[in-house]
Image 1 (cartoon, helix red, strand yellow):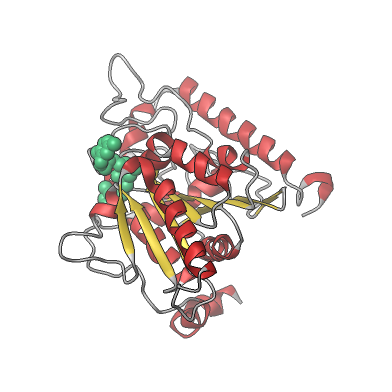
Image 2 (cartoon, helix red, strand yellow):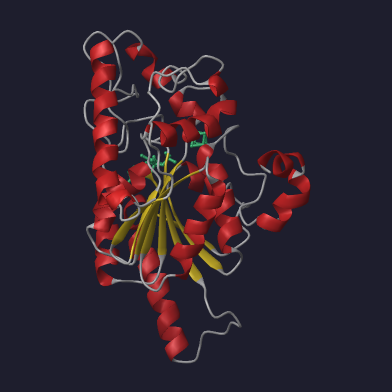
Length: 331
Ligand SMILES: Cc1ncc(C[n+]2csc(CCOP(=O)(O)OP(=O)(O)O)c2C)c(N)n1
Ligand code: SF4
């Protein structure tokens, strides 16, 4: 069944996924860029009834070399810190114009989309986002997470994982790299008790697109945290983007789940998590950590790797316990 679908991919894929490109080719992203892949999937999921508010960061820069734009929809460049504030303003403006009968469009729904990287979201834009979520504006916010400030030279962010070497958390004689754990962004959003929060990954496009659609359709604020590897900053082959993203899900490093109607649901439930040091077939004998230059210095650091491994497993088990579809033996 699966084999057939794969063999006839060209026949089936157009029926499953829109062929319309909202985030078009010709942008300046690096080869194998995870965030650019995410934007392409997001554009396909929402369609053209869309207004994009895009924070500074790689995805803003590569898509807007003046006088060009890779976006085929209205797009606003916003500063790092106020993406969610501007998206709130756009959403509120649409509401007021509709009320006054001055919003001239045949479309029932226009999605207002805020986009920021992990630096622009988890660090600098968090205050504006928290305010917007608390006020309950009708918009979708998507954080594409490449786990560092990539655009300005691979500096650590609060989304950078423990042990990763970046230009501001360099590994060397004095340090093993990033000393803090990745901020749990989805949980921060869930704490606002908004209608919809989900994690997604470029390695699971159908899941990602279904969540984008849900987030766009929900009334009120919705947030998506999207895992998107960056070959340049992770110092890995550009052909590994999707494999690494999948591996992050299968190891429990980045679990896929959603929070809806006050309930957690695991979308990919894994009984046997892969080991972060495991040699997976698809890696031609290269495990998750070793495939990335940012972790390569940990190769013989058994203690640090064991700490990372147990932290990943513990966090996954805590999440699993919260999920309605796995507690009490239900799957
Ligand atoms: C307030 C402010 N500080 C610093 C900068 C410089 N700056 C531009 S892009 C960027 C990195 C963005 O990182 P992230 O949000 O993680 O997105 P990425 O580049 O990884 O896509 C920085 C620091 C800025 N534009 N505004
Ligand atoms: S540096 Fe990373 S996130 Fe930025 S365009 Fe290149 S691959 Fe994409």
